[in-house]
Length: 250
Image 1 (cartoon, helix red, strand yellow):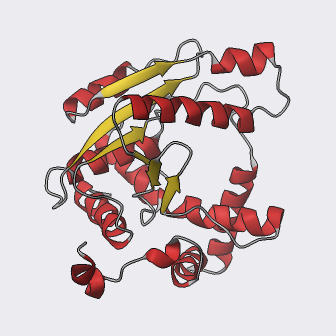
Image 2: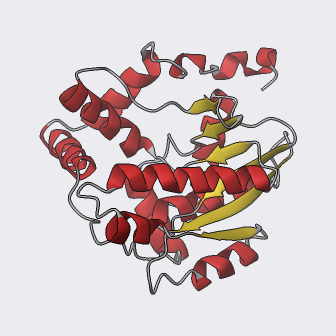
């Protein structure tokens, strides 16, 4: 995927769900993976010409693993002229050494998000950007159906009232395959996840299920995503069709 296509798909999501308003300062969570680095490219490029002026801050929450070298990520941020902050924490030590959590993912995510939100507020950001893509949207819906018995996936825009921050997901129209293509084409400096329990999860199960369905019934993923767009899920119903954007001021 070329940068032009990434920018086009990102702008489509930003426009349709009115994700960005003039003066926004957006904190991008950088894990070091391909998704977050692709989002960094997308928003750093979009800010140069988007009609609503906004700024970007890149933030990585360092969980405290040895050998987690973020030097390549720092260099990319400098190349893109995006301020970069690393939040050093003892999350890994707390979870694996002190608490010895048998199922650490939930607590880790909660602590990581808390550190990220706190630093974003400290830097004066009013919005957070996560790098969830189209495949994540579809996989989350299937996980909710299978494991929880409800029709649900995350929203394009979510207001977090406890922190007075708004969470946006500008890559919801981008396929994971295109993210991988972008990574290869632009040689993104991906940093390997050092987590000792990184591996097979419910998310991986859902990913494999979507791939199998899509193989057996080509177009399944797109049809599920279209059903989400056309459904009445909270926040997704706020989508502004292109013909109405001028009237709404988008």
